[in-house]
Image 1 (cartoon, rainbow, N blue to C red):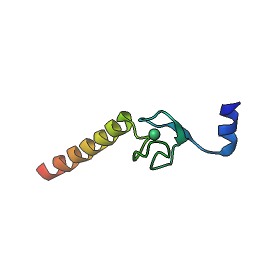
Image 2: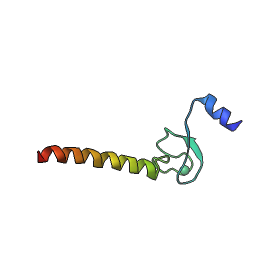
Image 3: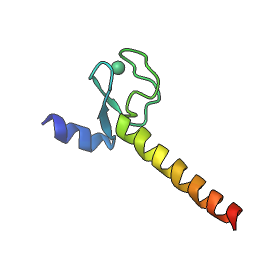
Image 4: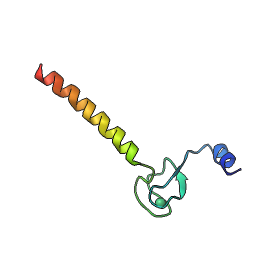
Length: 65
Ligand SMILES: [Zn+2]
């Protein structure tokens, strides 16, 4: 029933990486423990880094030619 309630609210619920409480995914600060970007995981950081490296590779390629 808890899952059903989450869906009807129309909110994406994520878990805080620090205190493990359930919070809205769009929240930029955890209301329980106060850390910033509580739903940003290592996976998100890895994806971001991959994109940056990819873009830099393209830029470097075109600068060399
Ligand atoms: Zn938290």
